[in-house]
Each structure stands twice: as C-alpha cells, then as structure tokens.
Length: 275
DNA sequence: AAGACCATCAACCGCCGGAGT
DNA sequence: CACTCCGGCGGTTGATGGTCT
Image 1 (spheres, rainbow, N blue to C red):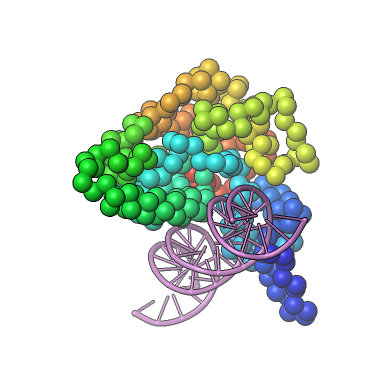
Image 2 (cartoon, protein in one colour):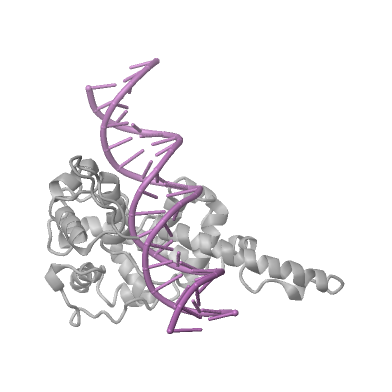
C-alpha cells in the first residue's frame, strides 16, 4: 500500500494506512479533548488527515472496548439472524454486537457470502447428482438464515419490530468486556498482567484494564456480572443491559473510565452506549 | 523457492439525512 | 425554502499476508 507522497505546496490530506504516531496523536487528542467537530480534529490533533478519516480510524480501530479477532459462533449466528431481519444495515447490526464495528461485520458478511456461494455451488452439483434421493440429509450443516431467524439458535427471540423501533438495547463497552470474557476472548488479560505502555496500547487492553478495575469494585463486580453470563441468551443480555444502564447512571459510570475525563466531550453515542 | 491465487481487513468514496443559517 | 456543512452509512477498492501449485 504505502503512503501517498504529500503534494508540495498545497496542504493535502494524507491517505492510506495509519502510522502508530498518527494513532497516538488521534487517540491522545480524543481521550483528552473529545472529538467534538470531526473536521477540526485533525487540525487540533496535528494530523494531516481529513475529519472523516479520523472518525473512521477512531470508530473502527482506536475506540476503547473494541474486540479484535475472530467472530465467535454466537456472534456469527447473531449476524446472520439480524441480517436476515434488517438486511445490510451494518450499523444497526453492529449495535447489537458488543465491541464489533459495522465495517468488521460488513467484511465478515462479504467473506461469509463468498464462502456460502462456493458452498451453494457445491450443494447444487451435489443435488443434481443425488436428485433422486431424499433431500433432507443433504441439508447444509451450517444454520440456514430461515432456521436461525425462526428458531433463534441461541435464544435470539427479539423481533424485527423491536429492533427497528430501537427497543433493542445498545451496549456499553463494559459489557463488551464481559462478553469478551464469556466468549473466551482475551480473557487472560488479567489486570495484574497488563502492560500499560505509554498509557495506551494498540489494543483496547488499557481501557479493559481500567474498566475491569472499576468494575471489580463497583456494582459490576466479578461475582455479580462477569460470572453470571455463561451461554447468555439475548433476553438475558437485554435484561442485564437495562440493569446496566440504570447502574451506570446511578454510579457515575463514565467518570470511572480510565480515570480520564472522558465525560466532558466524549461522544459515546455511536459507541454502543446504552442511553 | 517462487509465482499465482485467495481471503481478510483497513480505508476511501459517494451518497444521504439532519441541523443550522 | 434553499443552501451549506457535517456526521453517518454502505459499497467498494486496494494492500497485505497466507496458502497453494
């Protein structure tokens, strides 16, 4: 890829991959000042990017609480189910997947489509060969969209209406942390073993650590929440989220985050914050 | 070992809608 | 009402790394 050389004279916005220095600048700026108006962020943060690029970088990569790595089985099924209901509404789907971005989900879906396309082709030829025999035993072993939507493979019983009306809860990244633990994400990241390089790291470990530290002392302590959600259903999740929302408000949750004054200008509206 | 091919992911682009003037 | 600005969204592209031949 490489970076496009900056044009002489005219201040042109830089494109391409972000360097670690740029990441640091953006992260530090937003954590300290909040993003405010995105178009002014690059200027104030000393970046030669446009506002859009900064926003995207923050949302998709730098934002605290983001989950990295493979999608879990449950996440995959949730995506399939929600996509079946909502279509290509990636941002809406992302709101129900803790720590995942719309971009990530979109990418997943496209690769999934490719896989499925290949599988379908295979199935088609297989069917033709065995057209005389019963079809039931040739069913795809992966969950069909219809089945997922109707059965709710892991108790997903929310309705399209509920989703469309915004009745589905959005998530706190504190919950992302918990879900991550449940799903065997980076659960080995105990607080003690964390390295807080330069205050922040490339991954959300720093925030997770801080969150965990907060949570362990607060109403979301290990016993109460972290250990209570194995094989959590959507309904349970929903309920716990409602509880979470109330607790958050009641306990000044925001101030708890990382000891940084994020509350002043820190927009969490798109950060799966339940409001 | 090297080139071709493929999958994944980060980032850009263009469009749309809402808010402000 | 028209215009501009901005943020958000979805589609698409291009780079990169891994696998295959």
